[in-house]
Length: 194
Image 1 (tube, rainbow, N blue to C red):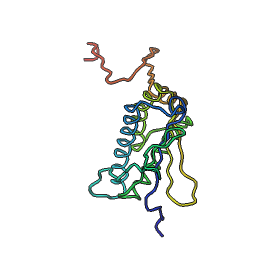
Image 2: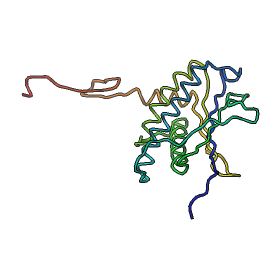
Image 3: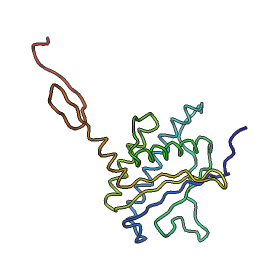
């Protein structure tokens, strides 16, 4: 029997701590973070749709911000935005689940390998981390798919940012010489090998 979801599963993005605790964040930072999350959803979503046989995979799940009862899209406390999926919900739930799982593994320093679904999440979270460092905030992602079910939850805090920094600090040792940084190309132009 197919899995039954809410009509519109709710995806929540929470900005906690730092400036968010003061109920203020720079608008450009909020929009930039939401844009990175939207791009992350699209990139992972295309891969999920393709693996599930969707012919014209576009990663569009009709994600709309949901206004609260007062008509406000962002709620107080820490700054919270809720979004609902309106299109291709089954693949959207799988996509968001994968994003939350990868984010959680980064936060808990349990990254052993990165698959095709994790790469866009790493790349986009690296961009978000720069914004978070400026505002000293923590990002929390939450997905509620079924009534009375515990939400799927992941945080991305200073610990996750540190994990990303450690992973991006590549190290390569060649003949007792340590090379640091991202290796783009290694070429030996010695005439002896010719």
